[in-house]
Image (cartoon, rainbow, N blue to C red; front, side, top):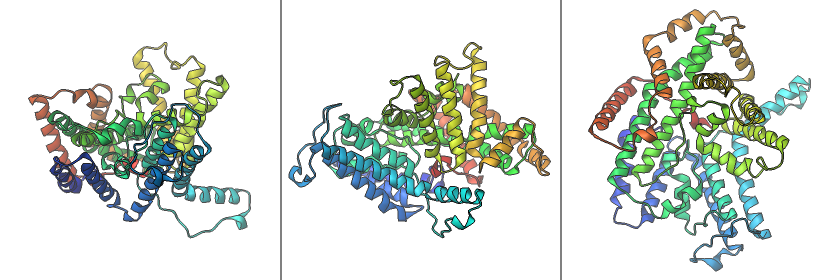
Length: 491
């Protein structure tokens, strides 16, 4: 089930909101129960077999947090007692250290098995073939299916036990509230990746106001419009260009930039809708995008792109590795390593590793040059243009099916490829006025339009009419579109 579908808009969402607000006189925990039920229903709609997996990891992380908080395996002795807040940065006992390590290892093993098993087998077999050791290949009928959104809810659950261990949050004595944090459907399968310490208070106490609900509706409509009116047509152009294999240079750039627009508007649209749904239910989620294509450097880009993931990698990986506290060489190594892991987090393929290496190398190079962009002496519009150019080229590796396809596409970008026989047909398809218009609309919104976060701060009749028109247009267009994926659902 996706947010931009009739079944979600006209059936699931009204039912979820109706049930949620029907309990307005009940304790907050009953509303959390509703969020758990709707979250598991949303998650299990496509693949019910993975619902027990999410519950099992949730239960284990919750039990680990109680052990950490109480420093005792015998949890029944502390039943009903409030959970203490551990001393920040204080020493931890062997029991607490074992509990946090068990939680982290379990989450990483679950994520690693489901996400990287097939990748590991395929990489091993490819290496064996290249060395002439075909007999040593592992021929297995076993194929692992990737659970929806496992990368997102695994990182969120890990943030909980780590925050409790660090003394940055209290452990939740009630499984209902923690389950609500993990399974809440607005951010369940594609983020934002919310730190537990950010939402802990809201899970127990939050307010519901008309102003908050109205802003949530505004966020949702803006996200739906970006998804339907911009991301989907740009995605169609990108798919045609990348499927062509060897397009002409002009069409190659058109397809690569269209993909850059698709992935941005697709993901930021989901984030807007998730933030809006959270507001409708009284939650305030963190901002996840800050006009990333207006960045003046790669460092600036990562302050603006997928902010929740960047923050997670910084707080739970980069800083624990030593950050910038152990010398310049270690800092560069940490930057590159974190971006390589960030690339692998997105997908089990060498193309994602290369994408992470490109960004990690550029981050290290910018830091070597004083922490500024390589073109910081240029006018701002040139800084933005060169940064966007680098980002688009890196996106080719993110989008391509394999390394050979990515390298072939890069050759086409710079005029070194041999256009395939279908290249003229590709041009006639992507040059259609609808696709060209969507492309330029994406550019205008990306570089000149106000952000949803700012535009929704205040409402009036004028904005209400704009939103009503956008919603009507999005629904009309959605009924005729046969292309409506969410890219980050597969990560």
